[in-house]
Image (cartoon, rainbow, N blue to C red):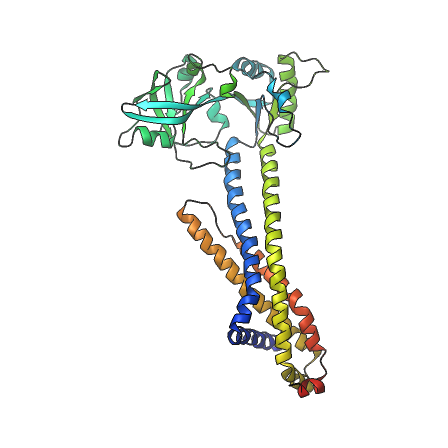
Length: 414
């Protein structure tokens, strides 16, 4: 009960300090408010972007290996000139892998032809991507169809002219009409719409299906060069249940080297990629941004800490006679120390709460622009915890000074 009464009195004194010295308090708390705002706003933005990116990466499949010309690694020592000379993967190599691999469950070919024009009657869509899939693509990728269906096995094998449209393309070509079984013009060919992807929204890594038109590979090879760098062909391989990515990659590496007849002394002329590589690189980028937020916010909090310490020194000076009376009535040094420390913490919490409130207002405004920012409980607790720590640090010296005052000298102070 004693500590509860002490806390209550400290909160009341802190509030009185805020009310009586409004300008001084606002200027002193401004540093803490700006610092907490800077740190928590950066973390909130990073969390939102990270969730968006991770969601996009998860769509690629954590247990899928991507065989292609270019490795998913970037940096100053990225030897692009070496990778540029590598041969492209092909459907023929995919067929050979199917015969050789024992640890894989599904195989698929994927390629993309960008910046294409699609037409339906008087409606036209530009800058669309034509995605070229082999039949088993649906077993390796994550997507949902809003209307219609996926390619049948017969349509894929025979190269039938069918297409699945992304949500945005469907809206542009068929704003007031059911697209299923209608024919559109794709690179001068008439193709029948059999399905529409569900709306996914913008993807940070650019793998949204909203702006693509997907066609079977055996149809595409009739009028598109799928062995060209323009389409960036990729082989996708999914391991069987219980098979680790590393085990699958080891088998794929051996078989690819055998298929390409590479000698033991020769380096691989292909890349084996997994989504873990993307996640690691993205996490590194976001960690650097978070450190930047700590640095920017840290300077503001440092200034705010000095402001809080200044307020507490003034508060100690103004209440020196009261401290003397309290000590003469038997108050211990620890009682005075805790009293002023609590006041400093409460002052910093006011500043931290204001900073968090500003972050919340920013997330509300961001919501109107379809930006995926949300103030999480973790970040709120982090902001309040930092405020408490700053209160302890900035208030300790003034509180310690108050606790060591001589009661007789304190009562005599003006």
